[in-house]
Image (cartoon, rainbow, N blue to C red; front, top):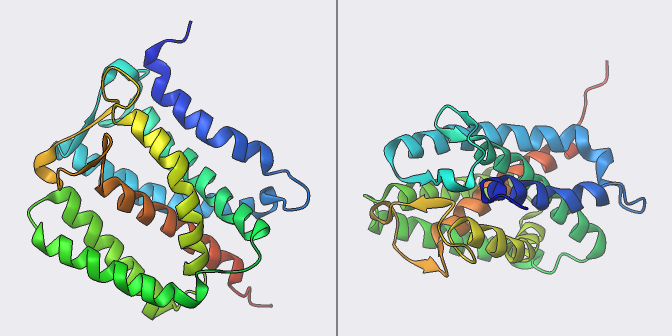
Length: 234
């Protein structure tokens, strides 16, 4: 019988299982990008784990031991650390797969307008909720990162990223919904609503959508950089 203390671990493994299997699909072999993919996952993972530890210590969010194996790395359960590996892998695979299936970049011509709108929205809400740690840190950081990609790096893949993220939101709402209490008796991850907007999409804080966007955008942008960089010849 399935024990509820393995729920979070199961969600991590479930998220990565099919993308890992289909990474060997011969017409679009994702495994051939692994030398870049794991770096693109590892760097943001370190940043987000430090951020996660900080907010856990502050009580911005926390974890319900009822749904955990009981293995911790500092204040973070093992499952939470694995989250920053399993979920990004699944999402970057989705970005890769859609790039193969959808040859046309439908949002490419509009990526500057979409990004400019997002930056304005994020900065405005961030300023209006400056005292809410989750809202302010997430919105300002994402706005800055988008600005760097748009005006500094001049990324040409933001349109494809926005399209992919739209599809990624489907499993996001399922997995994050369960983690925040949908379909189960309690919450796997709880949030202090004094540190966020208090707006929920079902059981999911609205900030999670932008937190997830920042995480996956960092994965994708590092992957794109590593793939495009020119290796100097000796």
